[in-house]
Amino acid sequence: MDARFGVLLSSRRDGGQSDADVLDRTVSLARQADALGLDDVWVTEHHFLDQVVAPSALALAAYLLGATRRVNVGTAVTLLPLHSPTHVAEQAALLDHVSGGRFTLGVGRGQPLAEYEVIGRGVDRWRTGLTGAVEELLTALRGGPVAEDLVITPGPRTAGGPGVHVAANSEESVHLAAAHGLPMLLYFDKDTTAKSEMIAEYRRVGGPVDADHAFAVFLAVTESEAEARALMRDRARTVVGAVNRSRHLVPVSRTPPTGAALEAVLDTVTDRLSSAHPVGTLDVCVERLAGEIAASGCTRVLCQVESPGNTADAERQLRLLAEAVIPRVRAALATAHDRPAPALR
Image (cartoon, rainbow, N blue to C red; front, side, top):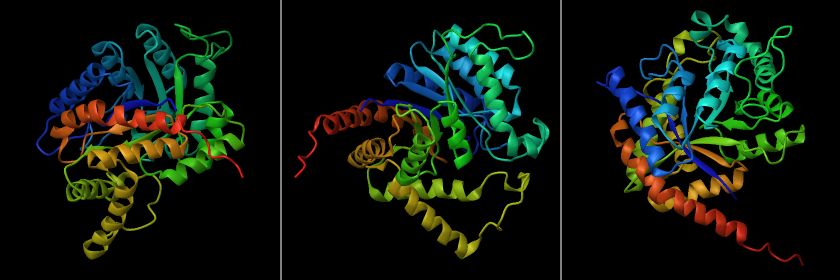
């Protein structure tokens, strides 16, 4: 099985780090990924979060394309309903041209947070705007008219423009991606079963069998199981914390837990993350990552190596990913592919 391996740069802030510190680290990690031979670098878009410095995935991707030489750079994701889809198409086509085809556009709607009130057109745009926005984007990228006889300039570098992935979190978004033949991008919360079921549904409704679906994972090579669990508990605390929960534009169904109830939830989430993500000794990381690729049907991997509270370790983790984990995962996948199927009796 052919697979592509990339790093997902979250531009996350640890305590005491300035905006400049965070962005310098992001650029440095992208350059390191390029030098180490990774296939992809992916960047995010978030607004008004103290913990993340990433207000424009497209702008950051543009800079990183200029700062690197061979690695593909993608957005994971551009929050399409917040922006003019035609303008996003123009920028994507431009980046596709000037990078020599090294750009991938990931799109999605994100969370119903304050940005839809401040930057976008309200929560209704979050609820219903993605389908029309994707259609408008693809019309422009595929050289069609966006208004009367107007087409974007530059036009697509190649037929259809740069690759486009759709972040999928619901049956609706699975069907949207399938209807347009676009591969899906599946996030950290999806376990193997969920990913497999979403891909099966994608194919059932007519999506191409050979779509290069992508998935995101937390990755850290640790010395011990105890160290791995501590890292996953920090991840769990971030997940359960639900940053900017008070700025949700739709009702949040429950009150965040506290005290013993919070600890119990953290234990549950830590267990789930620990069993699903390649965090642990080198052998564990290789086994889990190879197994997830083989079992899920996804062929593109976004590895997040920046751990909350320990982003200083990201450079070491990225080197371990490139030099130790990926070669062994590729070998394991090749061995599994070459192994003959058992004879039927």
